[in-house]
Length: 568
Image (cartoon, rainbow, N blue to C red; front, side):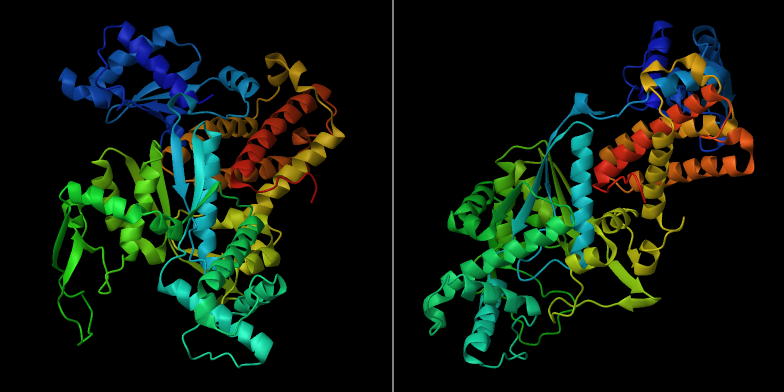
């Protein structure tokens, strides 16, 4: 139960019963955690919200509401007015013990407002394995999908395969060059602009072994089949990389399929019918020092009508579609499937695509869809205080699988989501393998293992616990833990509504820290021992409490797709 949503509803009901007209203000009313602990457990902003309509000082309104609440609520130890117009509440201990009894796995928290959501993430060019630079967006998108599913939405996890264009031709030629190297000892030309990575050799060997093509004598005769088979092998490699991260998409959409099925023409025709297409000349790109650049007529999309910096070209000089034109077709394909919300996860190197993507979706949908792009900032790897450098083009990079092999899936997933996607992330190999409080994933998993160790020693039937049993939980440490548990539903809601899954590992770390501190109290003071305590009723009450901690830790870790070990 979210005490914040529950008491917002109760407070609104109480005020409307006393003649307050709140229909126009209910969305602005909120029950939140006060900024400082000394102000109580929850805070209500009604006086500030209502002051302009009632033409009264918010402090006067707060006093009027206070008088009403004092008569109607008895679960508060204190209710106080605070400037500039808040009402602060502190619950009595009896309330917290009742709350502890009711804590459950808070799934489907937002089911009453459930949506059908499409999340496109990773969508890395299929010309090589996933590297560390892809990991963050992959894990952010996957965790966000888990979270949105968890709170009651229906989510489709989608990958867009960029398997069309010149980069794919170069990829196919690279595989062919490696095949000739293997079969005919023709030296691979590393200066030819081909992809030099070792993984190209693996793809070449697989195609040879499977006998997918009989003869490699003439590239022009086999280039289409070779490109298709090479792409299939590349996607097998990428899907295996994703599985090593615990990621499995629901749907893979091929750019080539969209082009071949005439989806690009369909999308451009729709924009043309809306009068968003014209033939014109784009200004010279800023910072472009190319002296050979010449202005030329191009087929353009009026993306500046929708907030973009410049209009966007739809055709190249050879009259083929631009990458952006194919992207327009892909987003039309998404829109045709009618989701309530569309979320694109982009890497930092694609941040410049935000405005044009938003423009094309707005134009295609007549501004009628909920479309959000989230950018994941760069990840920098450090080991022994020195940075690891990556270069996918040169084939000199750390793959996602190598990272997982080095530190484990759990550490990669937890730490990649531990900071907001808007912030650069420093991934420290030494830190994530350290067994200390400084390593968040270790500290959270250690909490689940430690609690399980206690539960193996002490058997308590939670169904037999009553509020009277829990009355022995009267220390400030225990009450603070219960208060922290009460914040979990709000953490889930804020994370889901704001698309900020980093709140979850941060909350889990804070809760785990409180548990470890509570456990260590028993080493310093026998009164706080959980297991070896002569008061068996107190033992049962404390075991009930840590069972609830474990429930929340396991729920949060399941969203992150990180294990909750029973032993460590």
